[in-house]
Length: 205
Image 1 (cartoon, rainbow, N blue to C red):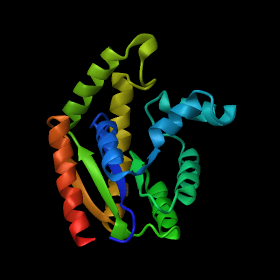
Image 2: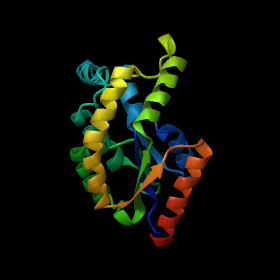
Image 3: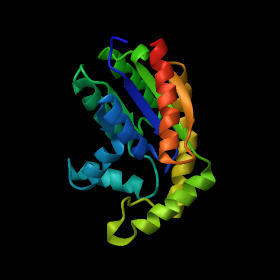
Image 4: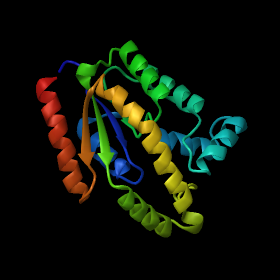
């Protein structure tokens, strides 16, 4: 493959995307487009107060971030990325309009389907809630990792994910090499599943 590898890593809430993203970043030397991190930077003071307020109003209810904010970040990061390194789209995009624009911008900078793979980490809803409860307990109080980690918010997030992500998956299936990965088991087991899929993709790229 003459072009650097690009990976779109999607998945269910609490499926272990962040953990697997670290493995992928290190192994394939990718640029990290982590939308969750970008959202947390905004919530912690980056950018305008109006953008921060709009973001708080959605994430506190377990809803997806406002699409205009997400689209602006996608565009800036994809178009400005070094051509010599691949991109990891870490947990993003989650809505069909965003997915179409990501595809457009990736094409614009010559990051073609021949160099891009889309993966989805899947775990059952029961496992999502189990993992989320453990995370809430571990990070509760002032050490809370996510402001939207409540059971009600998690159930809303699952509902929004399943509704919107299905359209994103359908779109990417028609554009990129796509695989769903079983997210159950140890981190190493999941990593090996992902590695096998990427190795197979690279053989035919």
